[in-house]
Image (cartoon, rainbow, N blue to C red; front, top):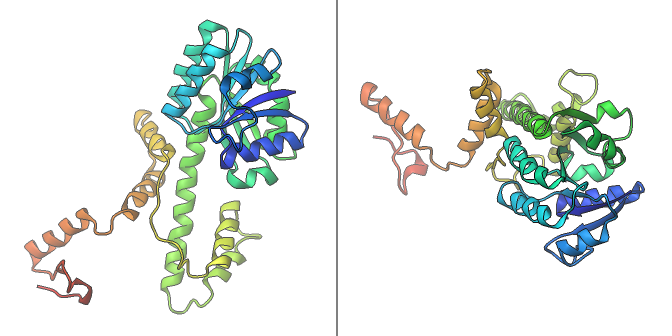
Length: 303
């Protein structure tokens, strides 16, 4: 089988390598022509046998929309676009609607595995028509982890279902990471605990909290026991916000995922306006001391 792959960054580049290693011929295109197999989208399309399959692996939002729109003008009836970035699920409905009148098929695929996917395989969550999924199964089988198909791949439902499942997956990931992080901080704060990293490592076999995320935290602590080289500033790429929004829209309570998302917001504040307001209120109603801003604030001056 021969496919096109657009986007050869950390994920896309590794996916190209894994596909090739497993017998799938790949022609890749990227703006960085040093990584690209062809110099243009037009030449990528020309290099593929009909009916063509093109996997899009570029940042979500406008970059993805621009690529899908361009492919709509270049591909023909019977061709297929698989969108594998971290797009919002309702973008898939728009993209499928854009391609459908031209007879071009569309699948959305949530992809999990990060930089480890080349070696371990990628968890895949796909939305779209059953016949198109079956047609693309050699590609999905090459990318997914070894072992039973249903432990690394799911046809989640109609168009949008793959990215919706990936959105929920990432929301759960937020909550799990926050729980491990809070446990780490508490262990590090207690003076009787002298081997924080050892505690986490001891949980990696036999305990109910073992997971790949736990293994990765142990690896991070092995490399930097006090995490001294890392600043506690955490971005979010959108999926956690979308998960919380969908919880609200569907009246599903999500206290853990919501709290994990808000904790990321708090990590970006060097001096929280909300906590300034709390301190001011405590001072107003109870006369409690406040720490004043300015050069002497580090000394804990009060008033």
